[in-house]
Length: 131
Image (cartoon, rainbow, N blue to C red; front, side):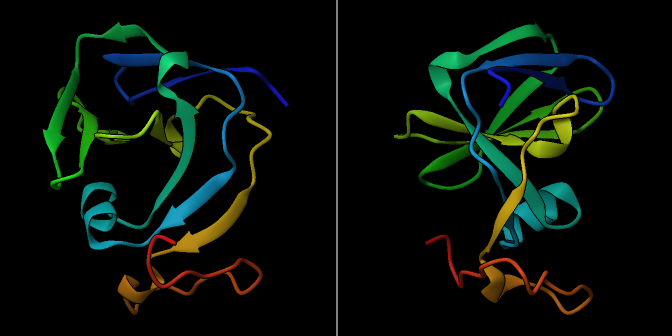
């Protein structure tokens, strides 16, 4: 698997590089992810100390809960990061990565919050919360 990944937002105001292996993708169906992404969110994780910025003139953060914040582009609005305050890893929206990545989707989380307008992949494990 690749050890260096690059990605960014739609307009280019946020460009990043993630070094080290990335976790395979998990689809999150929680209400916050659905509201910030417009649908469920597909996330991978990287070590925080392996993340660097090529361009960050548009990066904005907001506190989305008592334990996490979300990073997005203030220019084009793209949702890019999810970061727990106490974790040593950062969530990266998989759709912001330049491909090919070699990653695969391995699970659905917060399926208890899934709305009724789409179906889950029956071949993936489903977790009611973030287990």
